[in-house]
Image (cartoon, rainbow, N blue to C red; front, side, top):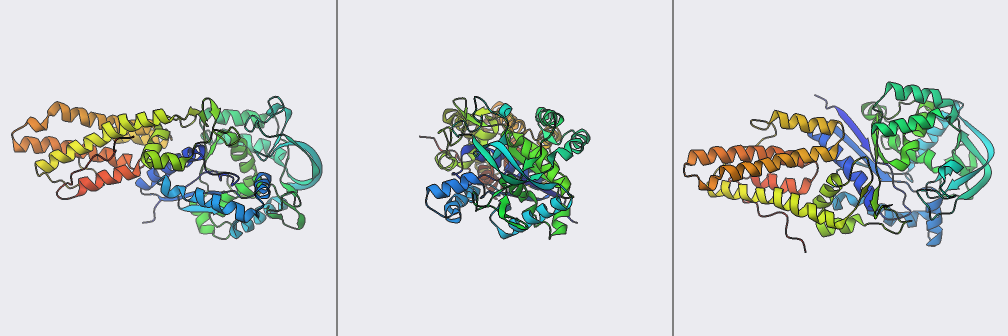
Length: 479
């Protein structure tokens, strides 16, 4: 029997700087969703990758006296190697410099052109290289981009190709009305609806090749390359081998896309309009996450307050970092990163609740020579617990779902303390209490594995040993 299919993708980070904790938070949330659907027995395709085009990447390569390819490669490696450092389960890693992406982007361009949605004109505009986006005066604060206040706004005056974004105002508004959960959270959907209702301006989709020679060449015009946002958004289908692999496209598209709030317009208005033009379906849903901040400021290289996810994972462990980013940092609102709070979560929730209970339970099971057979069907399942958990996960309320698991773990700990099996003398009574606790604990740890996969796997391995293996504390004391 063929499995149901599920597709999820992060945005593609630019290769103008190393990975920072903000992207780590985005991809960890996507990873949890991907693992959840695998747990439901879906065939999951989880995409991420790198965007290697754009003016700011070309600028950085020039600053380093390197070719764009040589400049990008070590940064691409760092993004890819987050897979091990953060224990990620992505299946696809697409690079916009790949031949298959270039081919897909050019075919996508030709389909939009055939539909009459691409034309050429001369224009003047204010432009933020940091966002790789055109800016109106209303987008700026004191003449600066609010997302890149340390960058100078550039004035562009050249002939480029444009996409007829204005043509899709009605179609987008109708789509939003028919798909009320297209953008999550709902207030972001209202935000993009308001933006579209005010009227859409056609936007530039190319640049002069002499200014950005690392871009994808416009079909039929060797003097122009594609604007980075036009080409980069195509990654969501080029990674599915569009247009050649029709079966994969039909199986997995449309999919779920996750992004930061600064990508709202691109992901939920520009991209759906482009897809409509090319004769393809818009994404299934867009999840819009908040920013990570430090001392109230967005964490970014331009602010000089980046946090290295590699360093955090090495210092505290990948599960600690994952747990903290899922519990203390809101899924959809901005959250302030704090190493002190990260350490507190480690000690109170991971070491004291999960680690200590696992150790206590396995010691008692080993001491009393009690064996159990655990399986994925969960003997005596706690239906209310699973229903509550699934409802949160299906609404993508990841932190709340994780706290339901921790509530279950705390209840297990309370039941053990209250029943005090170490004081019992009857073998039958001891076995009944410990088996019930072990079953409830096993169920909770199985669900926790989508959030903290390494620690959960260590515990499950100990519980599934025959006889049950003593589980040493899996969270050592922090220095």
